[in-house]
Image 1: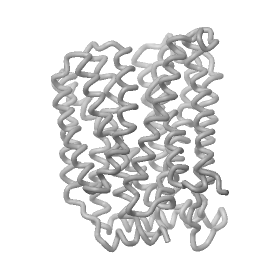
Image 2: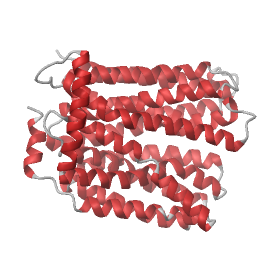
Image 3: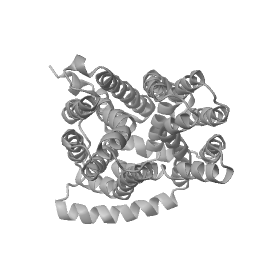
Length: 427
């Protein structure tokens, strides 16, 4: 009798989202920025601490954005997506575990480990996304992709809630103080990531390439295929148009994720309320992402993403008039309703345009665009706030990203022949 993870490869695949989302919530969005300022970079000027964090995030994003397409090309030629996923994940897991041992004031070591952890997190996602085409038929891309995002929000949210409780009541968990609880939370993330990565490694069977290449020829072929992929993307009108649209609107989505807490603090809202709103978004996003997947099957992925972008555009206008904690919580609910749907259906819609046998390579470009989609939005907000001397007005600048990205996406059509190629990759 087969084990459950062998009988349910789609669920085994989706559980990796449950696994690595703990890093995204507890480390990236939750504890690392605050703990870096208060513990590892204590005593430094606020502007210096902000600069150090900015350099760390920018360096990690740039490295993975540049490496993602090549990694995908190599994986497609070598047929080793699971091995690459495991290797990058272990890099992230090891770096996260190492954060526990970083002493107070050692900001350089903390920064190095954070960059390595972020690289491992994003590097693994390149191969995780590509494996979607090995666990689902084209007709099920929307549903399975949404399942992954939904489980990610739930799993990341559950561990984050436990970690927050540890920080609020450290004695209850046998910990000396809040600082010890934060450091121990990094260990829980590492073990969570490792444990729930196993179903994918054991239960997902990837489609082998026509020919397995050795290491040296695989690297050379990767560079060759990367250049070929760039030419294919330029020649493929709908795919190129989608990537430009995705770059614009996902930059807006990422900016909302990264800037929401800072925006709320600038308006004078309490940090404890902002933390509660972040948790609320995670748990609302779980069922909403799965529901969006089903709606994508019924109405179409592109149409549902457009609905989500319209909601985001409305949110930016609403945020301009925000003046209470209750409204911030309400906005957190609305964000949770559409955030996972926009992300998951974008991934599955792109999968329908990927040529047969090129999933990791093309998803490498997709992830590269997503990583570069964390620059324009913050720059727009910063420039608007600077010139108009108004934090409130800066949020309205994101309308440009949602409207322009949505307009381009509206014009994208997937040729029937291209959809057939995606289906062929499953055979």
